[in-house]
Image (cartoon, rainbow, N blue to C red; front, side, top):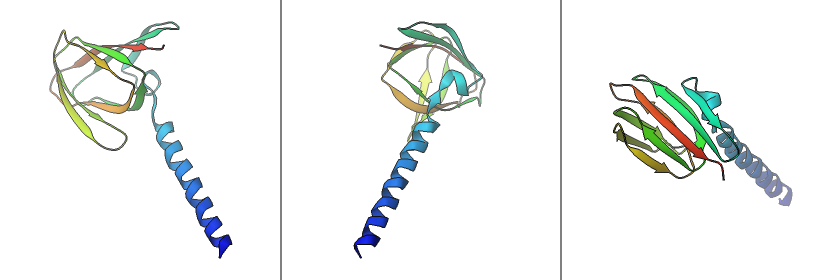
Length: 123
């Protein structure tokens, strides 16, 4: 009886490690998973990304440290978190916004180009 409980707990522990490990593996560097994100500058303190998506363009699940986004265009985006929750945002040209560290995917659900500058803070 004790052996079956031990085996069950081991299987549960391994399953949890795999689930959380897979979620972490899914969340990658935007510059590596999206051809529409170009690194313009990087040093030990910041990384600056130029990101452009046509309507319907998508970014796979990725992570950001704390960051600032500057919008060059008006656009409507949908972000999805790893738990499946979605938020639709209307971005305005000339707007700058702050973001805490995050893991998400992004999709341009509007009818115009989505063009932003992302400044990621490293420290």
